[in-house]
Image (tube, rainbow over all chains, first blue to last red; front, side, top):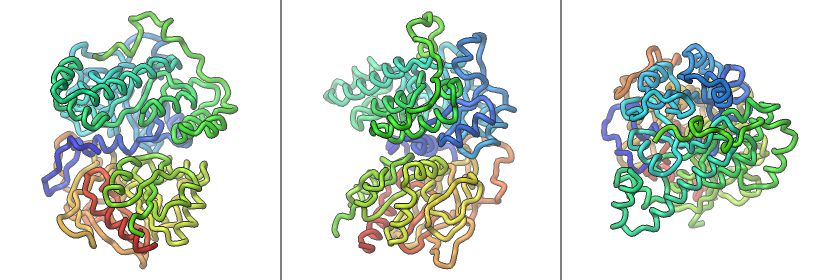
Length: 305
Length: 219
């Protein structure tokens, strides 16, 4: 429950509150959000049981392969996807690019992902997300980064992983790190939380809240490198509340079947019998790249701070 | 029965919030994903979430028939938002293959208030719940367009459609189905209860207490 949101004392209906923004992410929990580049793919995702789709021009694997500057998608493409499905539609804006975010809000997307997968537009500042009616999801590799994004107004956090690789190891590292840092805060006496806030480079109030509740004040999903039902289930067991799948579905041999299998695996993440059943006969997974083989400057997870 | 056992359908959605609210309202609350778990509960909550996903998972994991049977047998069920859609006899603007449980005699329009940028908070009075109006949180919420003779309307959106706007809103965004004013957002038909909004997000336990009482009375 988003305790940190102030109650609406206004008698008139209000839009764009922290509660409706964070609440929207609560409704996606236990679900799978899939990257799609065409209305046809969006329909396949919806048919498979996705809780939302992420509309983008190229999936991360192609962004990685083709290089160049990667930007917000064409509004016509986003419109096409919005019209094709009835589930929520998310779209990506570049880090710090508040005008791309304004455009996405005007198009009526349901969530904006301020994403390291696109080329950053500002290497110092992220978007002031409080200034928008549309909610934002942001990536984080550790607790301090997550809390800084929440301070800027993010209503949902996802691990970064290393997008477009099919290598889940970075997502694992980020999920474990965030959870470990939360557990550490819970173990600290109250008078050590001030220094903990300094070390995390995050506001004391948020650090105190996390120490008390044992969780982020917003929903935590996982993203980056998830390619199989077992990957998704492992992330859920590591404490993710839901899963983003990028290149893993539409870069695989049988997208519709793989998408449906990942949806089932996410719901029954703790049931090995179900997982064994849904992992059969999916055809080839995306080929993948080991994160270690990617030269440092090309690692997406290191964008954002 | 002093402590009723109430399940929350845990296929997808804000399960944890409902479990916490039910526990706070005096129930023994448990997640339900399998038919055997359903057998052990006296009542069921269908949470907020994505109704198309829930509908699909209910079929795949063979929960539909057991839930329909329990509903027919008089098990109390409360649905919030997506849960309301899952309890509606007829759904507008849904997917063609989307099916709910054999529930309330009503027609519900999905995402009726608009997209996420239109999601809002507003006070709503609920018949049978004492005290201040409910502080209702609507997230891509449905509304009820038509109710059958056996359905009691418990609450409506009272304001006109002039929602205040802290941020920019999409031009021409108003739902094609007309203004929100007076729309039905809470109903009850016998042992079945549904709201368009999310009391589980606000810490106000009155509706969950109302449902726990309903489960006690049905036992």
